[in-house]
Length: 293
Ligand code: DGL
Image 1 (cartoon, helix red, strand yellow):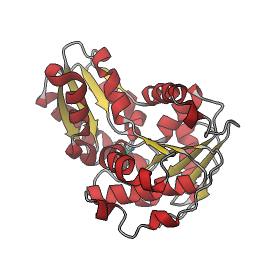
Image 2: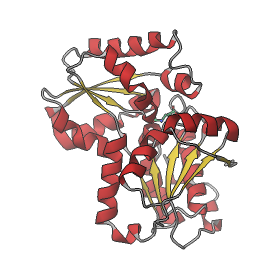
Image 3: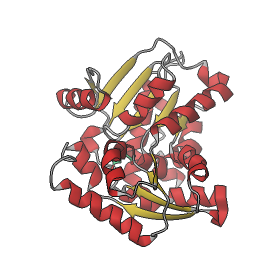
Image 4: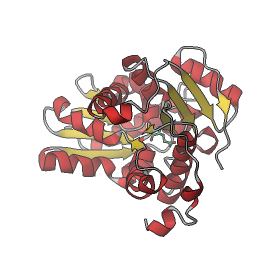
């Protein structure tokens, strides 16, 4: 993507961002990032968190590079405006399609002291500890699969020692976002994609759940896969990697406030988000509405 496409009107120059420390921003297209937030809060309970779910524009997984980048950048900037200095893209699709451009082209113009981190690299970093035969499967959105971000990271870290087979699952996020994933018809789609993945490479011994929504399907996926196949779910991996990052970067840690609070923002209906997030997190959630565009 060209420089021109990333910030046509130099609107970043007009941004007035708070310089005082603020919460850690956690972003997802919808509810999936809550599975990451939950594990981060368990590991790092003292920090303040600001969760933003772009539920009005979900799913991202079937959208183009340009749109995912545009939506993600808008949400990141809004989290910055609300005080975050560090934002985690708790969404594989956004990490795959928008992270690099935001880090390389936009952050230097917005504010070089602010940081945006993704969740694909930390996931790939632990895969070699789980696979015994080097045959790894990926279940993810069409956007994440088409980007080949997992394949490229695996190639960078392990060369040809790990073979990745990927399966795009276009129906899974819509089923979860609409709370239809436990309905009788939903299993057809889960079984279809998992069986297709295993046909592609029958030797797979490790499967990455490369979409933060899929953690909610973990038991279902486990029951469809054979018991000896490892399942990689991202929550704890991302939490541990963030812990490590904050220890290695005390200058960023100093920009993160620590009052153990958590606010939830949604671009969709507050009532719907609050009710759904309460079920996801198993604790009462009172969300606030936010307009992005
Ligand atoms: N949770 C997002 C991910 O990890 C879902 C993407 C979507 O909105 O389709 O990819």
